[in-house]
Length: 170
Image 1 (cartoon, helix red, strand yellow):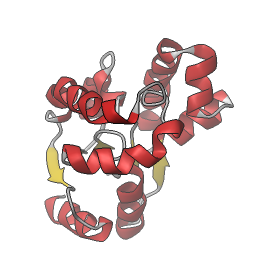
Image 2 (cartoon, rainbow, N blue to C red):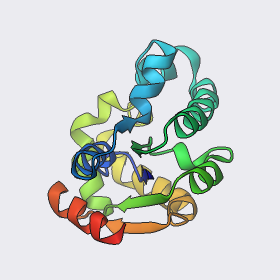
Image 3 (tube, rainbow, N blue to C red):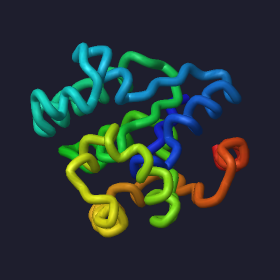
């Protein structure tokens, strides 16, 4: 079984993905880590040195690669992965379940504010602009995210609770 987790940055895709994979006995893959390894640099460095277009082009290529190479896995994507090119179609066609981890705006702001400097898209923002930026992104990305097979609300929930909910829905 191929399970893909999508959602905004800070929604818990990697945390939930690791726990879910362990729980159901599948390998876990974090797409950002996979990209970093393949390109030999971390994501902020790739954005800084090569730009977002270079990153997105390689993200699409490596997304297709990981989905075709693995027979079964839990894959955590980057927040923007489903929103570029035909990535959402690739996910829906190659995964048994695409799961959107939806988290409320205020909780995303609280989670992301302390990590702002490690997030390339957030680095140039002033802290007071973070809520508006995230709200705008969520609005723009909603049409992609809500195409997922399953939507799970992760707001104010512990990771183990979310994993239990997902297991019931699988």
